[in-house]
Amino acid sequence: MPTGTYNLIDQPCVPVRWKPSISAASATAGSPDRVGLRELLLRSHDIESLAVADAPAHAALLRVLYAITARVADLTEQGPEGDWDERRLNILDSGRLPPAEVDAYFSMFEDRFFLFAPGGRPWMQDPRLAEQCDATNTAGVNKLIVTRPSGNNHSWFRHDSDTAAEPPTAADAFLSLLMWHYYGPAGRCSSREVNGVKSASATAGPLRTALSYHPDGTSLFETLLAGLVPPEDSVRAHEDLCPWEQDELPDPDSPPRTSRGPRSRHTTRSQHALLLIPDENSTHAQDAFITWAYRGERMPREDDYLIWQTSQQGNRYPRPADAGRALWRDLDALLLQHPPAGSAHPQQPRVFRTAVEVSEDLRVRALGFDQEGQAKDTQFIDASTPAVLAFAERNDARTVPAVGRLRQVGELYGRRLDRAVKRAWAAYVKDAKADGAAWAAEAGARYWPRAEAEFWARFRLLDRTGDIADGGLDPAAARQSFLRLAEEAYDAVTGPVTRTLRGAKAVSQARIDLYGGPPKNRATAPSARAKTKEPTG
Figure: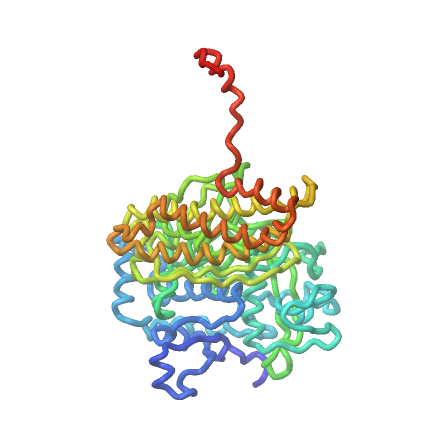
């Protein structure tokens, strides 16, 4: 395969999972593990889901596929009659994306989908980096592949050496390219010279540290349609363009381009510029340039698949990815347009306001990366719920108090448990400053998985009409269940020290935190007693 011919349209670059019926009925050749973008869309109704192992790459790829789906399905504008919702349902009823439109789209932009295109315009890359960056200061493939260690970074999934780096396949390089555009770190990068000025500092990618939430259907076709966000009335298709559809490359010395609608909002937010260097056969990437995209400018963080929160200072920020936080704890913020008030004032991701129109049996899939703003990466996050969107507030407002209350009760006893075991440890070691992190971690590991199972067991008792069956969402019953789980976790963690008098006393005194702590100080009681002249003896 000569250089410059690896085209994402037809080369097998996306891993997929076929529907069981398709896998059973087709030979291996008819249902390959990886497909190109054309086959991915043409057969999206036969594909159960993407099979991208790395959650950040999965989240990034979905945004790209949403943008292409909107274009080929003619869902880029509300239309003169404002019938966007009706047109989406028409596509859904047809059972597949229109083949002619899919072929026409890829024919129009075929030259923009080459992964390697020396002298041309490679997909989601900046060919100017070959001249603007020092050719002796490339990033190397270990830095390109996020799951590999590079430089002095620790090993994560595997051990690799920069002195003998294994070139990634073109398909792996494609997914890593996406991860850099959406989750790239802030900090030092390769030096880039533009208009005579060199700089080597990048800002973080638009999804870095964030957790994104996506409606998940029974097929990729259903998932893509449900994931589309209705464009605003002012959006015009010829303005709301993806990077590969734009005639000119962005000016790194100018402010970032303003998004013109959902398609550009979710595909043009990158803060990094990359250029892959292929091997002689275009089957692997042998090196890469990775640098900043805009000098000293950060784009406004806009995204319709995040839960947005507000800090005490009034700043808006996405709910961060936390590998230790289960998805059920976000459920009310996903289903309810106005979740229970809290200090963060969470806002429902915009996509869920209309996703249920595609199907009431949609699940929610959370994809993200527990990481810091700069170099530290901790863990991928990929979690799914059962089919829950039928319980969205738009369908039944009676779920508002039920779902929110159930989540709040589960978290309440999780917080009380954490406080109780830390207090018990501090009392046991006779050090008020001891944090009891080891006990808290063990208690959390015992409580939260069981609390999650309890939550879903009670949530399932809420039937489609909104009626509560068997007390599943009854506040008193829910409190007793979560309290019992907290008590059992507390006893298991603190039990070993109760064999001593000091330990038993510490555990007994701290246990009251499970029930809300000691009674509040009643300093005003004596004066009240004196005023009423109650007898004291």
